[in-house]
Image (tube, rainbow, N blue to C red; front, side):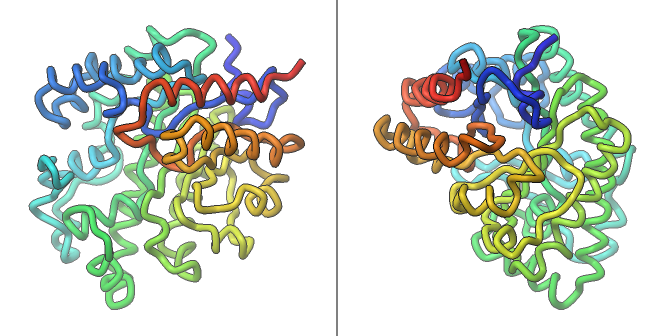
Length: 346
């Protein structure tokens, strides 16, 4: 079984540089919206392995990417820990019972007990694995402990993170306890994803930029590295992708370290900088600004620039964050085909 994507993640020579897109199954695909309407509710879709598998496979079949990313949501972890999660139309995810104290944390499930409750995710992976072509890779994922903690503490998405950061500076012990508990669950969660059939795992730290660079290692990166160490010790053949968004200063200061394979470069971090600081040790992924997909000309300019910058490096084409809901499907297809055409090796 040959998976070009997996080989590229491991830094091996491949016939061409593979391409995939974060948040593949999404509102930009009419086929996804049809399944979402049938599910009736976003959480229902996450909890239904048959439907979740269907939308996982859609971008591979329709857009032509080299890897599928399993359909789920990062917040299924705190949901199964025992927090009360709902998705409010027009407002996003909300927890009615955010963590404010050690007592609030202690009432939640942890470790393998919580991870074992995510059976619908593992069943989705098994269904996809049965239907996915042998030459296509399947990516599993999790939110990083810090990103998960922001929702668990704030109770919803936030622009200021003031509740989380108040805890960071006034009660760091409690924040570390939350992060440590989530970290243990994530270890088992990714392990179970691997056992179910994923080829690659990615750790997303979507809200990494909320932490000042001097505190980022303490409150986020070291926990991500701990997870990567756990997975690599048990599954050394499984590539690990780290994607912290908005950490250009952290990269520039040479603070990235750890036993993983691929570093996701967000669109705000210059690829030349990432290549200089990280290119010798890690495969780089990204970093096109997702809004360039609104214009084929802007897309081509960026893809050509990335190909030139990384022509003597190791790179996986991808967006620098998730694809947006109103991007024309034709433009997404154009991006994938252009990446594959520009990167094919004779």
